[in-house]
Image 1 (cartoon, helix red, strand yellow):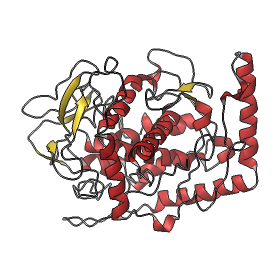
Image 2: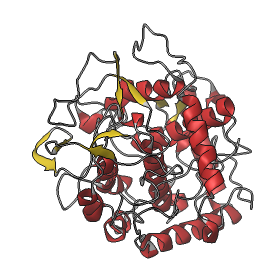
Image 3: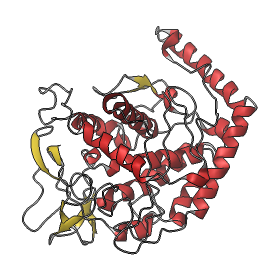
Image 4: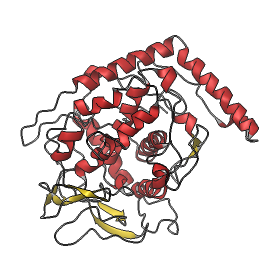
Length: 414
């Protein structure tokens, strides 16, 4: 199956005037990455590197007594780019029809029954909930870890596969180019509440600020929302699995925190934050991810998800807390907001951009331990660790997910 994260979901007219921000700098990085990857494919450099990694994997599994064929590559290993797999950078916009097709497939998963056994996750009612439950169950071993990037790449792939196989979706997973909407996310076509958006802001409800990932010293200023999302294609959806943290504080009471995985149906709430996007999701700020000439992925990951000069907020977390509220601002429950999938498609895109500045040197790099921020202390992650998709897909070794043109993948960003 061809997995191709297509272009950003943009630019419809909205009721309010909206002007997208320039993406010139990051677009230039993406264009360079695409050309560098093409060259590495054409001259066989990347294929040779992948063959070396395959030999290492076979040695590793022999030493551990495992099967040699456990690592699968497409045609040793499937590094092939044709016009069918590459996207024309100059025709990036999705049509209204393409946006509706994607939204219909997402809503389809929201109507199909859960396949997670009720004794495992009592709150799961739909196939959509199955993905939320998997993320919840693994949160402490897939964030600020050595597998953060590979796990989420595989997670989005598994999600798109479900859209295709179970709901007849023919398109590709769109990404949210957060730079475009950094000045005005509320009126952007991503979240303007139009039928082709990913839902609008919450209705205004007086509320306190939103705490940032249990950080008692930082609270996101209240905005124009706060209540239930009533506009756009997801205005009637519910978050079924109980909240794990009181991430949002409306004046009429906290979002109820229930027993882990329990059933607690409630509306989707948002308070979209230009305060967040205008500081941390700009073209200049995103460019910091690519500033270091080092091939050390630990530097890139820290800038992406842990350590920013401005403080505790990073690009990844700023994305989640752009819409914050419930469940988007809940670290465990965050896939319950449909914007999660567009956010993580773009996280994958910026990783792809970093990787393909130097494909051979960077494609097989991982760094970090197996537990969140190494709490509790754990061993370093390796390419032979397994990625778990719960009831949504097969377990698979990390090394199959380090390249978008190897393993089960065949896609590029261009």
